[in-house]
Length: 347
Image (tube, rainbow, N blue to C red):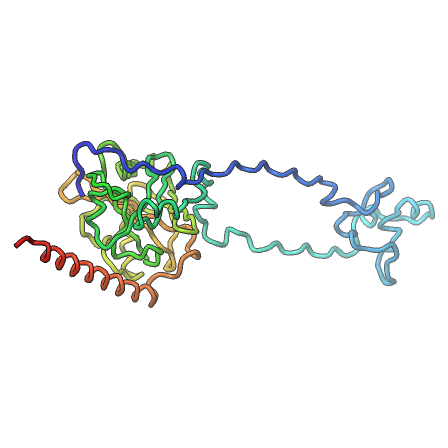
């Protein structure tokens, strides 16, 4: 996956494909305070009883109250009758009802990227996949990284070679295109989905992915966006590390215990501690590109999908069946390709 010294920029995106984010509606007018806690009637002069304690009492209280209604609502009348009313009796109810327990705080649940970081205002609201698939039927997703040049379609076909040297529209070009590992399900059913792209010297495609080697850059770019038909996912970066081509991070399938161990190692070695909580039902997207500090070096950025409930739990029976079907398609494709090549040999 090593590019030429200088490669042309990636595919020109059709304007109709990306929908610009809609203008943000101005915040509505806040409700007037009086509408929230308007008393039933203005109290007479003198010390007032707490509003909350008497908000649901009627004019006449049933017998048996320790304080007559006049003691709570008409202290001046009491005083005119000559009765001594302790100040506390006029300002506090006889028996305070305990305040209602607040609902369980949101902090009990794990923080997500949406709650920890605000949305990027420049992120597309949606991608027109109908228009995109007129360019290529292999388009399965779209990847956008804020404040970078990463804003490209993601392709998926029956091998990991074609889009190394072809753009999204099928034009032959060494810059290639971003593409999903052929072993992955485009519906993101796998525990870990891998997306590849060239590390080009002109910083197109995944040429800016190695910026995650810098801790300050990591701190300022904690998430990306991945679009699939009908949904937009936020990807929260969990780790950014170097690895070898063909290492365990590229292995399929992977159990939760194996993946958990690899994640722990990646987070330990990461250029920055992103502090992302992970659990067994999470799905991950690994972005992979070439690096050149040593032979066969790869640079990967492992991201957690911030909305795990939007996709089925990983490693289910359906995923295993899908892998089998994908493998059969790959085998059939190889057989057809070889058969066609043999038949086309002259003589």
